[in-house]
Figure 1: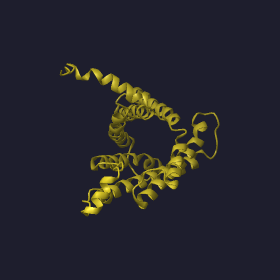
Figure 2: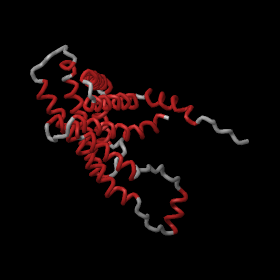
Figure 3: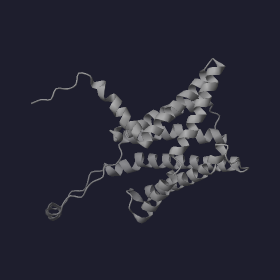
Figure 4: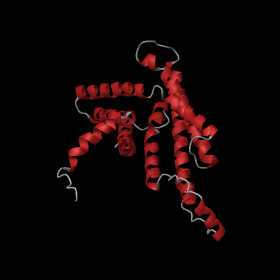
Length: 242
């Protein structure tokens, strides 16, 4: 007996959104999107009062989102440990090395950013706030560069080796393979996912680059880039949360 489909396909959208925001990554991306939209509104707003309120929303959300990643350095250094002992999945020594470098840089960035938390909360003002924040953004910039390099490497080289046709087996090898259970194969990321990740990284790299003065992109361009990267990054998180 066929099950009748719902006449209102959008009825489950609130439930899907609830599942998305109930996970930490989904909630952070939701707040990030609001922050980016508020930053864009602050730049294109005609009313000065509205622009000031949007700027306040941007700064408050940026501060609130830091609580979500306060202990992210533990995951980063834990992932480096897993790569060293061989518990994490990584293809090839080059990709493994780049992944270790990316996680190490991100972990150091989170640690240095955490050191400035009390200063930003006006609880403990320190004279070394600016130098530490500058070095933290450098680490973030290098981490994104490493991520982009690793993703481009996967797109250009790793995909070709993964899609390469296997050599023909002899009859003895075929009989031997039939007697053994087939190992669990891990499907690598698709080309679409890799290209999407490159676009996300290209947009996100403007954040530390603009803070360091390495790019002349204004707040409006950075806000638009944040909107694009947040929407693209949310696609995978949305799918995993359902």
